[in-house]
Image (cartoon, rainbow, N blue to C red; front, side, top):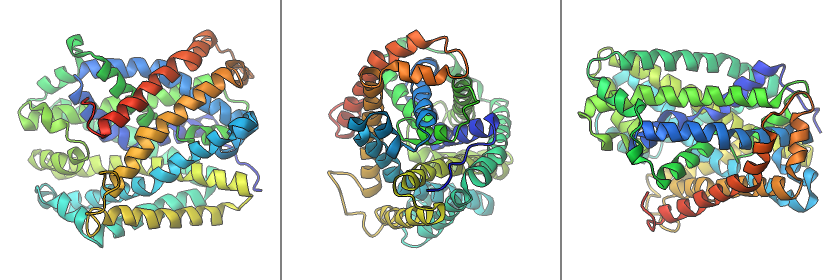
Length: 449
């Protein structure tokens, strides 16, 4: 087995973990959910949940990783032999997500190029549909993105993941702040800014809480085994609570700025029509190119935006691949290079199937879903909340919260340990179960949310 690397310091760990958390969920999913669920009301709920649920779950996962010095595939079994199955379930989530996440990363790579080369064409209604339904071009851009992700992981923790994060995360923050300032200072942006920043508590509902808590998992890379993997690379000298708060701050700041960048711009472009913001993936690939095409210096602004999304997607895809590779290294004693190449080959195969599911295989349906949509449903709506819920149950009732508290307090105070115990044993698993049930019911059209 390879010697286990560690991050060279706290900054490297924080930037790498923040890079994992900051991804497509922050830059397109958060803004359209904020628009759909009341703007400022959703923002208020999300921040409230981030500093409660988010803190508890992230501390738990980072502590499990550092305590065991193992990937999730082996870590749960080390904590409790009877719960080793949970490590397999936790590892299965990134295995499902990796191929289609890289495919979407390929779409982002294509649009980064298209925005620079011919923004007018990219803004046409038929452009996105024509691109994803073709057989060859999406596979080429998917291959480019997959190769970049694989290359970073091949270089390992220090020379690959940490070095990339130290370059891309500051760049991502600068671009996000710059674009947000540009958008909010444009004429006509004020109504969108007010809608986003001023909470209307009449719009608060249980659905808002469910949507915000579901976004929290998606945005902060929770219950995917990623934070356990990165925690296993964290030095025993670093304070877990301090690192957790900084990761959350970075992640939430990027999500907040993404909303501040996108909601006023689309609000202005659509004349205040909120439905233009609630269109899921097409917000990024169909609506925003139109917005950039109407802006002064739109090609520059659009290119910067898609570079921003590309950076975020790359740091997240690297963390997903690393979670899988780390598990293979720990479980089978394989070297990093062959483990990475095997997973990359798997990702290329299944990602290609997902891509063709929009074209020549678009007639293939799995319980009513297209290929990519099925993988997204089963990973994000089923396995992800299951892993989060069972992790809380295991910590709360099997190994006990004290085992996590002791790891946190091994080099610093844990002032909120009483709150942590109550959250991880009772409140978190109950709410996560609600997410699980509602997500399944929504996907089959039984519950409208």
